[in-house]
Length: 439
Image (cartoon, rainbow, N blue to C red; front, side, top):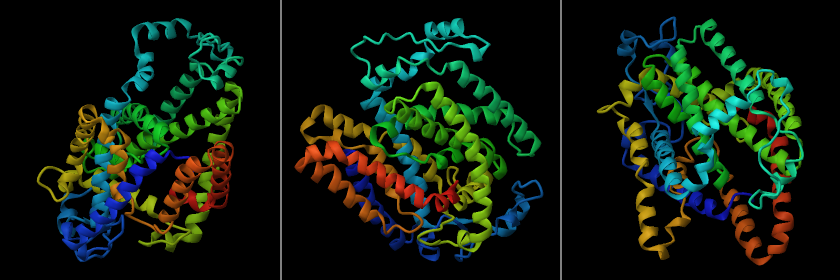
């Protein structure tokens, strides 16, 4: 109910194409799809049985070439290969699409990198961060200021120094962890993971803000980590932890700050609440995760799961750590079985260009109405789990964003988003514990 109709339309196109592509891959037996489960994120032997990953790893959890030679290379279900391919296609298209259509909107996100701005930040930085007054440079009489933001100018801001201290403490803790736990991830790999997260937050955060649809960039991050650290599944997991999870948490915290602005919560109070919530949430998630795994282990290990419990997120996280982290050159390099999965990212960079050119020279075609990254990404949408709720999802979306918006605009403006927030909150509350299995 809260996602714009334009984004829903592109989502729906991807949904239809998903069913067509999945059936075509299975019918044509591409990537030996018929000998493997139709929907699964696990790794398999050629005969369709689940691949025993431990048989190819040594005591350091690195791939042993001799053991791999005996076991043979694993296979992915055809639908999951499509998901990996179209995810990379959509992620690549995101960069080009935003630079073509929304470059002016993103320009302010880079202003902090200007030499004058960096100089000003260093000049105003006080190592005694606890004494920072949080003064703002922007005048409240500026007509271009968002009205919600104007109301927030009465409060002292949470200064950048507070966030910088959090970053420094987090980096120190992360470096201690990766070396004390024998993660096999070197310090320079950790730095690359952070830089990749910074770049991803800008682009995928922008797309999330525009469309309301959040992309899972984990496969892309695991691809980068796999080629940087070949033969090291454990290093790949840590690489994803500090890159993808950082992006995901940053988007959640940014969303909270937006809600705080709408509710006129003082920035420093919002910052404090986020820090406390993050620390408490980490402990709570750990306790709940152990409890869920202990009580629902057989279901979580199954390929199909149930309509309540599913282990698809941990399963795909694990299987991709083996495939990308341990076998990236054997499975995804040029000339290998799944080579087009990696090439899809490069191809995705060019996907938005024809649509942009078509709108520039033939604007009546309205190709500007399409979000090419969304279409590409959702071609692999139905790859795992129970998908019976998708039809209801689109039915409610079109009822809200088209029928109510056009037929009863006053009711839509007054109640639509309140009802959406209530339904979303109720759903999250009732499904909070089951959902945490994907943490």
